[in-house]
Length: 387
Image (spheres, rainbow, N blue to C red):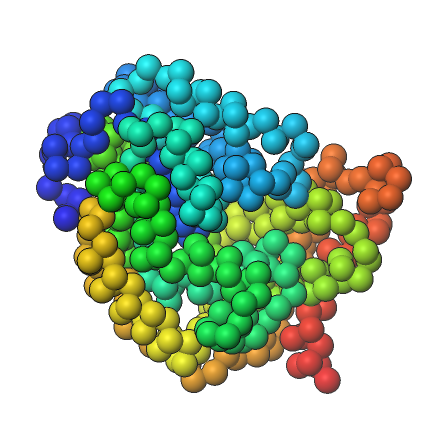
């Protein structure tokens, strides 16, 4: 399906347009254009109503609500009251009189089969699940970074070994494949919602607007209606993510809790780093050739399985494979930059209202937090280089 065959202002064709009354549940998974799509819906809430579309939730995405039902816990960095977000979201969706309601959160991709059934039951039989997919090879470095941004200290090479170890049953490996074994993800939700109520969108890396165009068609919006809010969710560079790994290591040594990390570092430093324009010559995270080969082998299996699944496919399944060139091994980081360290410090300062002592609940000294963040400039990779 090409995204350029609609004239400006023309309504979506019936081949993709979902019936009135549909609750479109977009479950991601992660790193498949979700941030820009959610931002486009959130930014255009008032205008959406004019076209009979309601975007559910309060912010860019109802992440806390999705976590409450799929993970059965309150996310680190969120208040205990966020547990009530799930019943509130269900009530909001049920009470909407819009022609179509859109709910989008990649956190739903974590749902086990019984939880997926619970979600579909809550939103009703008119729920249509949409899954957006990119090549597995493209997802590997970004998903490793997600783990690091959540506090992990594992190196990329070790993480890849874990992910592709068929005998590994760690929580890390299970979580990755629950999200990104795309054929199993589609079947899991098809079992809950019905095969006819699942659409898989295979994104074309050369068509940056495809995601927007498909969703415009699904809910009956004019072409070009969805416009990004320009929030950056780019991948981190190698120096940036190695700094994150080092601060995670030192943070764990301090014995501080995950909740404080989430509020100050994950939702402060990470976001501020991503606002920084990425120099073209700054090293990126590179996936070695052996892992690219393994990923493409899995992609071949997924393509065949998805083709036989019976769910609606939008796009070319062949795009789930990648022919990118890859190094034989991962390069070690040779240097870092003061600019990245400064960004980290400013990011922490921007979250100063969240500084609380993990034991007493009183304010943490700025010196203690800044010492930890400044340690990013002394990443282990840089130390190895100096030795």
